[in-house]
Length: 414
Image 1 (spheres, rainbow, N blue to C red):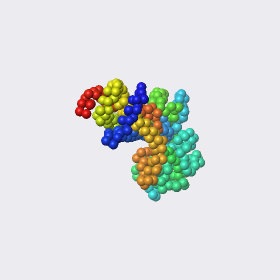
Image 2 (image 1 turned 90 degrees about the vertical axis):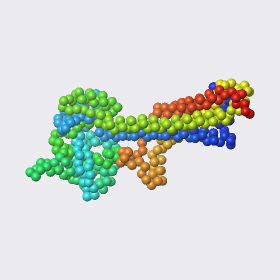
Image 3 (image 1 turned 90 degrees about the horizontal axis):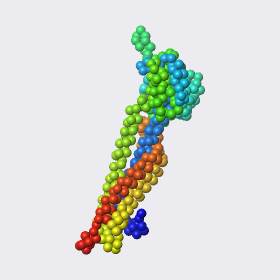
Image 4 (image 1 turned 60 degrees about the vertical axis):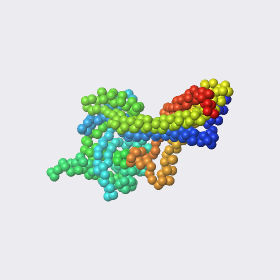
């Protein structure tokens, strides 16, 4: 498409002389703008994808794909309902859960917490829970004694293995003096770390039978958590399960339970993409300005080329190549920088935290304990294509202006 002569002239024009220093500076800023825009887009989109994947894996892994519950009251006859749900195709496991809010108290601290009661077998069947145990053992949990607390919960309350924690349930016992809260002290038999701040800071796991007694769920549970073979199709399973259990209970998928949260993530992701795309657009306008100045400065050169036999198309291709080279080089450098940063983002975060002596990614604010990232090949290709198209479009007008220049007009006052 471009012959050797055109490439020679184009790259000669890219190497600015001293009197063309300002044009060169604008071209370099254009290249840096495209490079930073592409790199930033790749990094931000990868981090947003990582956030969604990590949050989804933890939310779905801890809470199940579909919940079966009876709004406003405990779920009775849950064993029969569990058998009905287990018989459906695609259902992997059904877990009875007793769940309730409590006030957790030690001599160091007191705060609200969420107790989840489930059997030892069901705890073992959840890989995210089974693999999260960092200290202690499940022996006491298996025997129906002891509770498991998150690492951040233990740090906040000053707990160690074997420590005692007092749990106060608002569902009290009615007496002649009025309702009295239920209070019981439990021994901490293990610490877990799921990797999501909300769970590690507030969740307490308790054996199912003990939780039924503590929350006064005699032969009832709070809900059934259903694990399916495809969490992305939880809405489909929810409709099938709902049809099979009504009017005794109702089913809700994880998309319904967390709809506002994931919708907010989706909107934020799209807005970030649009805002950061403006960096590339601004850089593309810089290409136009630098190329227009280059065409104006090279007016005599263009006239000489035309008088030597160069066609308008050759001139157009020469100046198109100079502008496109800036965009292509900036895109290549930006994509390389973005991918390198993304693949090492956690190491970079740790280095900056050590260097600045401050926490750059507070888990209490961002939910996760590590900076996540996931590179989506399609999105990377989309960003590269967008940057290249904008750069090439920005090179068309200056090249067309150079091709339209008449030699007589360019040399009139020389």
